[in-house]
Length: 334
Ligand code: ADP
Ligand code: MG
Image (cartoon, rainbow, N blue to C red; front, side, top):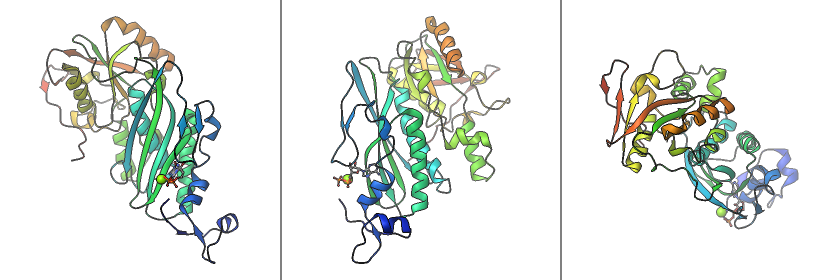
């Protein structure tokens, strides 16, 4: 354990934790105990967590006949969220965007870990942050099973784990020529919500779109025998579709006007490709059309056909009047 002593201002901690030589301190262990040790603990048994937070490592028993699906994502202030956001939303969003990769694989989430770097000890911020973790944990019945806490610039790394029936995970590489391309939900709403957030005029709807994205587990778990490939849209629809094309060694044709957007007027290619949508983009054989319509109806989530897979090696976009358009690149870190 790193020596990490922090000043404590609240009386609560004075009574609850030891004073070291008369100095009011809350060490790393006490901080973990206070803010992270109980999150989702009600779900430990059902998720097969035999040893939870507090030991050197978590011990998990895996369900028979399933494969583990694991992913990790780091969220940095100013890049993945605004530091001015409420700490509960920062927490919720950081876990949610990490979970999106599990949905893309058709997995059911089971647990998460958290490596957190904090500039300073701020009890109000931390208890708000804890609330956001509790919200997503309760929503998906996934416990927080471990992590690491350090001092440094605000950085939130969330690892997520889940399960999928053995051999059935959706990947980027199964798209076949002639497959139909689908997208869940609508595109562009989150990036527009981010503009509203920056401009200080966030609407109630924006809350879900950017601050608390809902991950499409209900739909993705039903796609296991239906989709030929899938990806979640984090960096931009066209860029993410290009990942499917490269991995599957195929091309794609997209009709711009078929892309479902949150406004009645259509968005430009750049607006569509801004990312942060956390919707599922997938391909499927034509014969599965009716099944996909049924899933959309059952889950009450729009699933739209936006194009098809061809023998090319890139993403071609056509405007409503048949003009060929070039996709801009989506979000790039470097
Ligand atoms: P070690 O030094 O052995 O890595 P730590 O003191 O870092 O142990 O962590 C003690 C326990 O608390 C471990 O079970 C670890 O997984 C958990 N933990 C530490 N930080 C966090 C965090 N931010 N969120 C969840 N669990 C945490
Ligand atoms: Mg550690």
